[in-house]
View: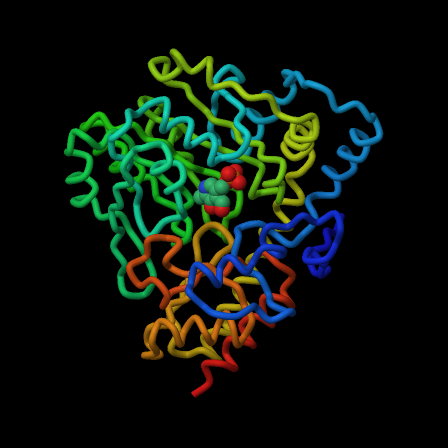
Length: 395
Ligand SMILES: Cc1ncc(COP(=O)(O)O)c(C=O)c1O
C-alpha cells in the first residue's frame, strides 16, 4: 500500500482541525517580542506534530468506533497492553510485561506525575540542555529545574558533558534526571555507551532516571535506537513511551509509562487515569496495524530532511545545521550572519512568515540566533519555508 504524505491539508481553517500549531501561532511572536501580526500565509513548522493524516488503518478502526456511538467510561482491555508489549519487543528488542505499563493522558502529565511522586518539593530535577521544555513538569511542581549543558562540537553535534552531569548528580538536593532520548531538539540518539555511563552516574548518586522516549520510532535512515531500560536495566529508571508523535495522535494523549523496578512500583497505584475509547482503540490499531505506515513515514521524513539540508547549504551558506539521528526536526544556527537577535527573528518570523521555535524555548544559550524547524509537513511546504527564509538572508 502506498501512503500519501504530499497532500497539503488546511489545518488553519478546517472546522475539524482544532490545531494548536496552525491556529495559535501568534503566541510565538509574543514570546520573541515581535510587534505586529504574522503574515496570513505564515508557514508553521514549530510544534512537534505532523501535518499528515495518521495511518489509514487507524482511521478505519476509529471510524468503526465512531459509528458504535457509545463513548462511555472505558476499560483498558488486555489486548491493549499486549499490543504495547509486542511493539517494543518486535521493534526495539525491549521486553516488559503488561503489568509494567501505566497509562497517562500525555507525556507531560506522565513526567509531571513522576516528578511529583518520586521527588520532594525543593529538590532538583536535572535536564540535559538545550532541551525540549520540561519547565512545566518541574517548576510548576515546586521542584528546581537544573540545566546541565551538553557539549556542542561547534557544528551542532551535541554530546553529554559527564563531568557536569556528575557534579550535578553529586549534589544531594538533585534527585532526578529527565533523559530525553532521542533528544529534542539536538536530534541525538544516545549510544549504548552514553546511556550506560549516564545511568552509572545517576545510580551511583541515587538519582532517579525518567527516560522520555516519545520520539523513539522516528529515526533517520540507518539509525538504531536502544531503549534506556534495555541498555541499563530497570533499576531506578522509568520510561515514557507513546503513539503520540509516531502516529500523529498527540491530541488523543496516549502515553504509556513503563516501570519494572519493584521498588518504584510500590505506591504508584494511585497514579491512575482513564483513557478515552478513541485513545484505547488508536493505540491498539497503531501497534498492531501501523508498522508499514511508520516505515513509509520515516522514508518520507528522510527525504524531507535531506532536501531541506541541501537547500539550506546552498542558499543559506552561513547557517549551521546538521542531519539529526532521530526525530524530524533540525536546528538552524544563524549566528554567522552577524545580525542582531531582533533582526534574525524579524526576518524569519515577520518578513518570511515562517514560524519556528527559537532557542529560548530550549534553554539554548544562543537564544534567538538558533531556531528549530519540524520538517513533519508535506515537502513542498518545508521547502517553501526555507525558500522564504533564504530570500530574507540573501546578501
Ligand atoms: C521530547 C518530548 N517529550 C514530550 C513531548 C510532549 O508529549 P505529549 O504530547 O505526549 O505530552 C514532546 C512534544 O513535543 C517532546 O518533544
